[in-house]
Length: 153
Image (cartoon, rainbow, N blue to C red; front, side, top):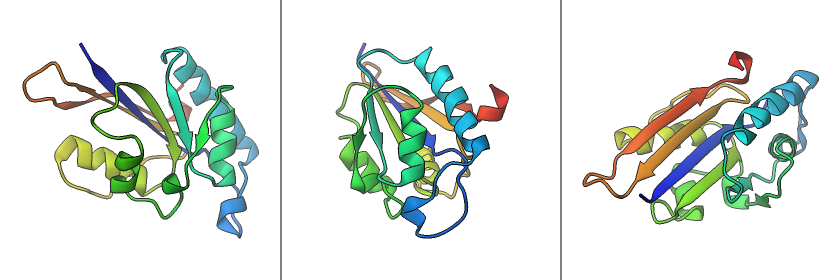
């Protein structure tokens, strides 16, 4: 049974300001990132791959995991669902991939994979949408495994 797990993790709450790429997490955002990271660590395999946008707030969110991750410019604030899926080689990749990124790209990606169309789905700061795709079933559906915000943990 080959499964791809795609975990879309929106960066935690960040301070307002410019330049946008240098915005950092608030105290609340740091706590959100730590709570979600703990929840993810309890559920992810050791061989999971972690990718992050180059924005400071996504890097801080990803650091909460305490694992190595790669910075991918394609996952930045001007990214698209198509560029995100291209970076991870969807649907050919097997295993688990965690993307730490931004709205609206993450919500649009979830909508695209679950419904076949991009839509402006909201994803709260620090929240995760966990999708899974099994290629051992005839229709290779994408399933929603979890959708959770850090304030629910």
